[in-house]
Image 1 (cartoon, rainbow, N blue to C red):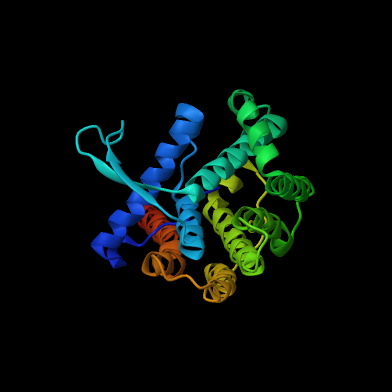
Image 2: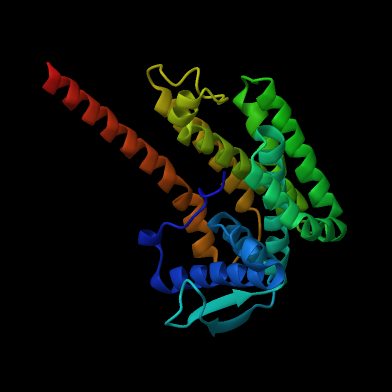
Length: 287
């Protein structure tokens, strides 16, 4: 479901883009060090945003280093790591474990079983370190699975489960910032779920899969309805974000929240417009 929270490179200063990449590479490095190649395969840009947000808020002391990897074997590249990186790496593994487990339980997907077994030992250790987060993630996913099984029609209810999951991840500490961080995560999580459903409409239609947006997807103005829902989610998300005293890397954070999150939505619309145009041209040729 991840892959929607990214930077808009075109609107970011070069130095900020390379710093963003250094945080991303730092997460990749940490996942490899703690969990091997399988851990590294769970890497996503979405979780990089959480590292930058929490690092900025808590002003964590960050270590800069340079090195090579399989992806960049020739030229050295910068990495930025701190205690937040380790926390986010653990949360990444916890999410991946549940994702694999759900694939096995729901679809009897053998890759899901293999992945869950491979991460089971790591997840047990993470659960001991972060019992609250792991419990809340599990509970949110259980509610989501029940909604999907019952083919719940309310997008607000279904997306809210993923919002609760993200709220759990964003609550790094039980402190004065807990409330705002929970809300940033909650509304961003709802945004991700809605956009993912919007992205998967045609695939779910072909496969007969559950999607709370399917029923209304054929009516006039559907695209703008979805844009409206997504806009409301990000308005609430950014409203809470601006309450946080984040100064470090603020341009990167605002680039992601005000610009980057919309890139995928526009790409989906552009692709669908092209497909409709191609279909019309093909039909005209036949006539």
